[in-house]
Length: 182
Image (cartoon, rainbow, N blue to C red; front, side, top):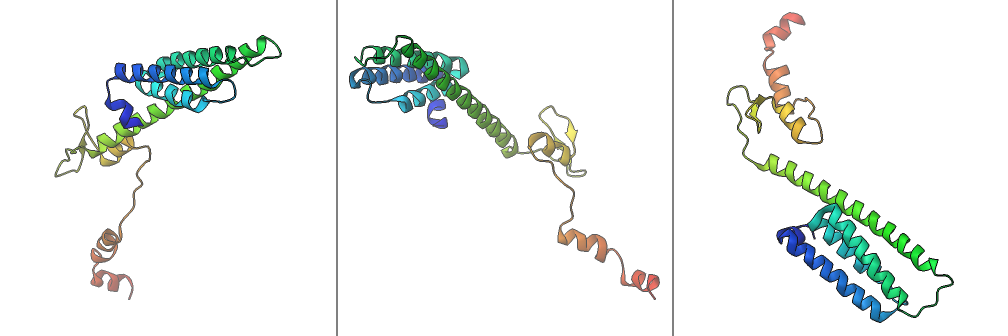
C-alpha cells in the first residue's frame, strides 16, 4: 500500500480516499445498522494519512464518523436515548484517531528506513589511503562514525580469522617464539 498510494500525486490520492469514504458511507446508509463497515472506513482513513499526512487523516476520520453517524441515524434503528448516537460517534472518532496516529507513525518509520537504506545504497567516496568516508556535507569521517550516523546499530571492533592469523601468528616469527620460550 505504501508504494501504491505514494506513487500517485498527493492531491489525487487524497481525493480518491475521500471519494472512497463517501462510497462506503453510501453503502453504509443503504445496508442499515446491521452491517458494520468499520474496516473499510479505517482502510480509507489510512490511505488519507498516507497521502495527505496526519491532518488529512484527522479530517478523513471526522468525515467517516459523520457519514457513519448519519447512516445510523437514518437506519431506523431505535436507540434507548438520543445521546447514544453521539456517544457512538465519539467512540468511533477515538478509534479512527488511533488509526491515524498508528498510520502516521508507520509512514514516518518507513520513510526514515527508506532514507537510511538509500544513504547506504549510494556510492560511498572512500579514501584509498586512510579509508575515511566523505559524508553528505563533504567532511571525511571514520567508517565507524559514518556507519554509526547512518545505521541504528553501532559497529564493534573485531578481527576476522584471516586478520587474526596475520596479526597474531604470521607477524610473530617462529624465531621470536623460540627466544621467548626456550
